[in-house]
Length: 190
Image (tube, rainbow, N blue to C red; front, side, top):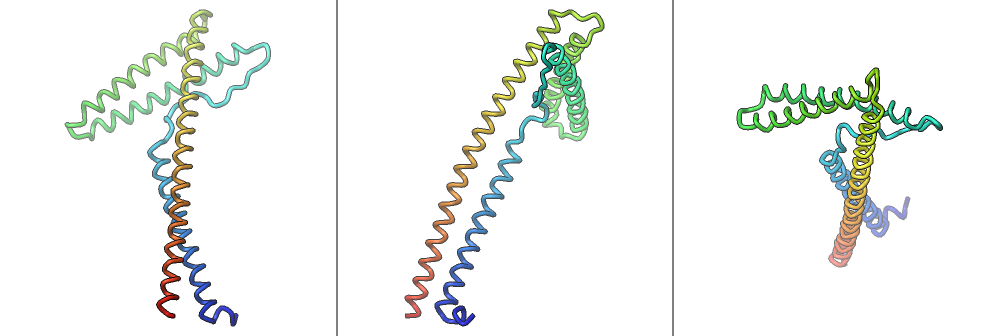
């Protein structure tokens, strides 16, 4: 305790506290920066299924079941998004209504396409060729969406790594500034 009360001990404690404060400031800035990036780069609301369990000997049946489930979820998602767009259309100013109407039209088109695909894969008397074509198109779209998502995550990871390196450099710069200030204060006291 006596070592802390001397000028050297007080200065060392002060330097440690300042370094700790600079580190906390840099970490806070990094976390706030990451939150903003995370909000801007949100993955799409509705994407491909992330898990698929294949049963031996029944590969197409399990893939068809996954497609039916995915199409039903996609249809409900598109309908929900269309309702939200219609509600926002009612309260939007006149200047932005054409943009919202274009979104509603795209969602209507997506709903019709999804309903048609769902009718093909869940028909009572199925057309195997049509079912295989829908499944093939969906699986290709899933693969493309997953590879796009993986590429986005790779890019986000590279950006986060660059930000972390920049934050480390800022922390080191803050430490050097604190050292310079301490040295200057010591020199002024001397």
